[in-house]
Length: 155
Image (cartoon, rainbow, N blue to C red; front, side, top):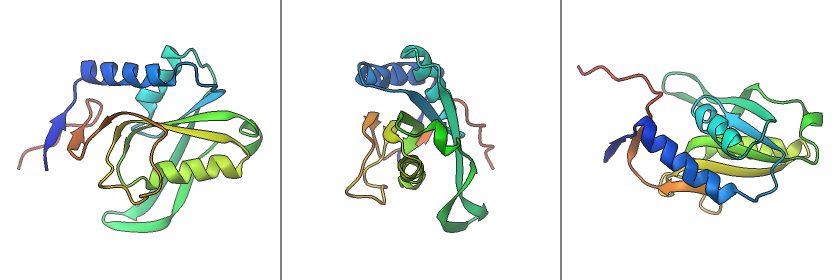
């Protein structure tokens, strides 16, 4: 599998590209998915001048190599904040799609209208062949290393 190391300049360019796709969309709030979606979510909120920024913290694991099927929300806005709102859900990557789909579903349950945007979309890794992000900057199957991720130590 190819590995791509993105620089801050790369992320700036891709996020601007994503923001241009979103320009003109009716959006009431940005919901950044922790952790990878926080930086792109903040940048997009600045580029589109959206001041209502929320976070969703969700996980599907409890220990290394142990996964659970149901999402565990560690943090999520109260339902009344979402009712009738057009919520832009932002993450860095749609890999399996589990996280974005869980947050999308939770926004719908709360009465909100979700729009999902990611920097990278990996269609061959997605567990949802009939769903995809509403907006994405780049399609890839590569292993992505973002500039905010800690460097891996060589063994």
